[in-house]
Every structure is written in C-alpha cells, then in structure tokens.
Length: 500
Ligand code: NAD
Image 1 (tube, rainbow, N blue to C red):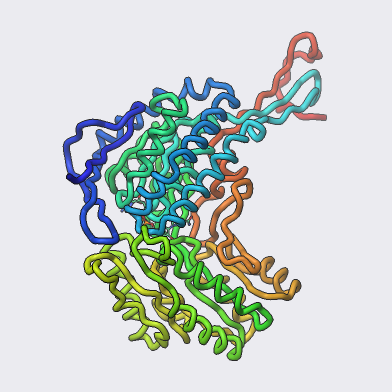
Image 2: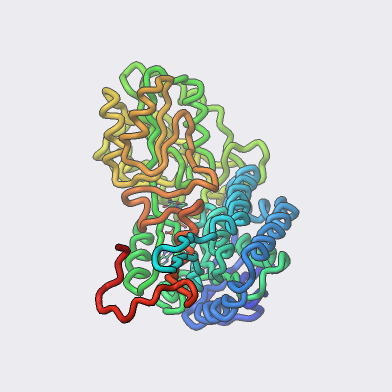
C-alpha cells in the first residue's frame, strides 16, 4: 500500500484532496514508495489564509514564550531523530549517518533561533533633542514563505522557518516534492511543541503552488533554496510582487591545493566533500585545483587509489560511504555530463558510470568518477553536475588558482589547503566567493554567523540564518516621541526639523 502525503494546514494533515499526485521513489530500488499531492492555487491559498489568520496572535506572544516553543520542538526532534533520519534517508538516498547530520545542522539554527529574543531588542536614544526620545523596534513581516530543495529536506526548511517563527511570523513551507515526508513530520512536531495551529503550514506541490506563494499579496517575504534558474525566477517574480526575497542557487565549489598542503588531509577532504551524499550538496567540492604539475600528479595518483576503496551502497547500509542519487532523471543527467566531459577531451581517470549494486538493478546508483585535465571551457567545469564527479583543473601557479573560483559564475563555497598563513590570508581576502574554508572542505558557517553565496549562487541582500535572518524576517519601525512634560514649547514650525 503506497502512502499518500497531502498538506499540513490548520495544525493537521489535510485528510482528503482531489487533483494530481506525484510519485515519491525509493532511490535504492526505483520503486514508488509514496504519492504526494500537488496543490493547486486554491489549495495553496487556503494555507496562506490560515497562516495569515494565525499570525497576529502568535506575534502577540512575548518573544521568550515563542522561543520556548522552539526549545520544546528541539527536544521533540531529538526524541524522534532516528525515525526522522530513516524517513529522510529512504526518500533522499543519503546514508543514515548523513541524514542525522542533515537534521542536526537544522537543529543548530533552531537553537540559534531560540536565542533571538536577545537580538530582537531595539535601539533607544534618550533625549535626542528637545525632550524627544527616539527608539526603533523590529516587527514581524507577517506571512513568510519558504521553498526548499530536495537535497536537505530537514536542514533547509529549518534554516528558513526557525528564525521566521522566532521573530513572530507565520510560515508556509513548500518543500521539494521528491522527499516531502520529513517536512510534514516536522509540522506535526511543531504542533506537539505548542505552536498554535496555522503558524506553520506545509503545502506540497510544484510550480503552481510556488507561483501562488510568489504572487499572493498576503505573503510578505519569500526564502528560496534550489537551482539557479529557479532561484532567479523566484527572486524576480517575488520582487515584482513587492515581496522581500532571498534566493540561493547552485554552486561549483573549488578546493585549491597548494604545493605545501598536507596531501593526506587533502585527499580525505576531497573524497568526503566530493562524493559524500553522492555529490548532491550545494557545498560539495566538485573541482580540485592543484597548483603545479608535481602537486597535480601526486594528488591524482592518491585520489585514484582512494576512490577504489569507496563503498557505494544502499542508503541504510551503515558501511556505505554514499548511496544512490535521488531520481532517475538525476542519474541520467549526471551520466550525460560525464559523457560530455569525455567528448570534450577531459581525461576520465575513474569511471563510475557502469556501477551497479547487486540486487538493485533499478536503483539510482552511480560510482565515483574522477576527471583530470579539465579546462574552464568544458561543460563539466561550467555547469553544476550535482553527482559523484570530481574534476581536477591544473593551475600553473597560485594566481591562476585564485582566478578560477573568482571568475566562475557561481560563488557559493571555496577552500584552500596550505600550511602557509600568508597564502591563506591572501586567498580569503581576494577570492570572489561567499564562504571560504582554510584547510576545511565544507565551510558551512555555524548557526550564529550566516550562510550565503555570491554571484549566481545567491540573489538578494541578506544571508540565511545568523543576524541576517532577523533583518530578513522583521521590519524596523522607528518612533520619535515627546511627552508634554519633557517638551519645550516652540510654536509651529514650517521647516524640516533638524538637530541643531
Ligand atoms: P530545484 O530548483 O529543482 O527545486 C527547488 C524548489 O523549487 C523545489 O521546491 C521545487 O518544487 C521548486 N521548483 C522546481 N521547478 C520550479 C519551477 N519551474 N517554478 C517554481 N518552482 C519550482 O532544486 P533541487 O533539484 O530540488 O535542489 C538542488 C539544487 O539546489 C542544486 O542546484 C543545489 O546547488 C541547490 N542548493 C543550493 C543551496 C544553497 O544554499 N545555495 C542549498 C541546497 C541546494
């Protein structure tokens, strides 16, 4: 019996729906494991209306009381983490250990959000002049929508919603239709934690649901995470409809290997960040840039050896380094890009195209692939592959290695591996990328800093989580006030008031 997944509105799952369903696959077997309803405009509008109705009372709760709900939610997610990770891994295909990491990185932002009352405090100027006090406060936007990708079905929705809720907004989440079960379970846990019904709603669906969120005047701000073409579309459409938008897109993350780097560390970093989660991470390293031929030859030799030891397995195999891709279409696309790399003249050192897992002929498995002598004009360099494929681009010197990520159209993450402090400092200051690692392969900032790429990896002014998320989820109101007893009677003035 295939499970039917609907929506979460007014504090419960929507019991009956008519209209189209999409299939949710088991990436290990290629079999359909659930069906997800795809909301139309009217069904999406119902969720927005519910969120709008619930928001004023939620905003009227004091900040600490709201934070307490988040803390309770945190404990409930921890209580159910094994169940959630199993659900996540079974729909996404990432390993169980990695699914726990997905949930954990989301919870770190919930922890941060529970401390938001401290950051919601406004500014106050006593006696700015003539008995006048000036103060500013942060007020919620109202209804905020989040549209999330398949590759982090717990982490990204939590990044999007936790600060929004802590600031007094209600939230409508439109998760990926490929792995919708975990967001629905999170919605149930929010209600169990005491979140009033309607403050957090989940609408499943595709373009029609998204377009409704982008155009409905009751939605005040939109957060999007996904591929760059859709991020650009969401940013343009939401902005044209008068909404705040922060939209994060694809990536091509480089790891620069200086000749003095510890190659053992580099190889660990590259196989983990390149092939972990089958390369389906926006912070995956997909390009290694060794500096100098000697470094490149040594690196490629070591990578080839190491890749031979990697274990590709079912997502629930505790020994697996990585599992299947999320969908047949993803598998086809990655294979097609590997073919393109070969045709364009890159050297395919390790070919993962023919990998099959015993007993799983229809699973979406792919072995790890390694290309050497990739050049910037090739498709495999220009495009995000989003699969277990690592490309080596050989740089003649440091300046060339710095130029490559800086000039790439994406600017999400980058790393440099070196023992030299001057090189690291110069690199971090000059590279044209939003998040930088020094001897760290996946530089996802901690929850109280903030996450965001540059160039075509991010559209909008503000990053996700950290203090930027409070700026995104609130509006500043500034009050200039004078009370009769403190004021000086000046008579009517017909010029703009100044502080002279
Ligand atoms: P996607 O763009 O296909 O889908 C993302 C969301 O947009 C989903 O909810 C989907 O239903 C919706 N969507 C898809 N097509 C749409 C359309 N035509 N109109 C309106 N909405 C549409 O992305 P994905 O395949 O789910 O996720 C992988 C991508 O996300 C990769 O490019 C990855 O780099 C990126 N990503 C970026 C970050 C980041 O922070 N920069 C983080 C995670 C993933």
